[in-house]
Length: 156
Image 1 (cartoon, one colour):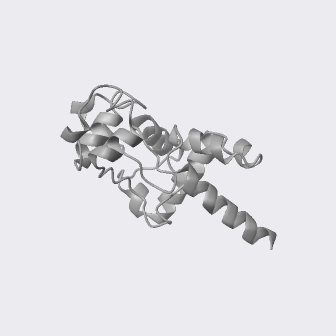
Image 2 (cartoon, rainbow, N blue to C red):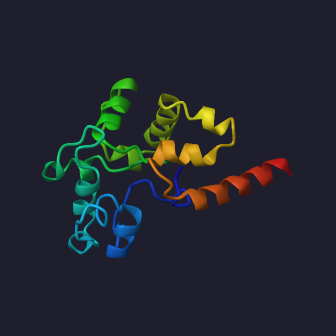
């Protein structure tokens, strides 16, 4: 789910030292990495936190930045990008997931269906849905706020 108020369709990753330690402790604080070396360096952050995951190569490969989150659900990782492009039979530039509204929405629907996210939505399980999309609890508080607001509007 897009927590940029439906205005942000590309992951920015411009985090301070404090935010890196808070949001990505296993990559920085817990791993003994100095977040100071990465603070306010989005490409370096992406390449570090996404290295050797989701089909990406190591930090030096640049895959973390190249395959950072794009679209309403923020498709992330080389495997997800390649699967989406193959499954949808598309010939696109990666940037189109953030800039082309039709492709962007298709990527969110594809990810939703591919990961069977309806099972969480059908049970109002926003926490499990957040973990399935984000791999953690980042943004959960805001997502619950939006969810409850929408639910209240629909019940009026």
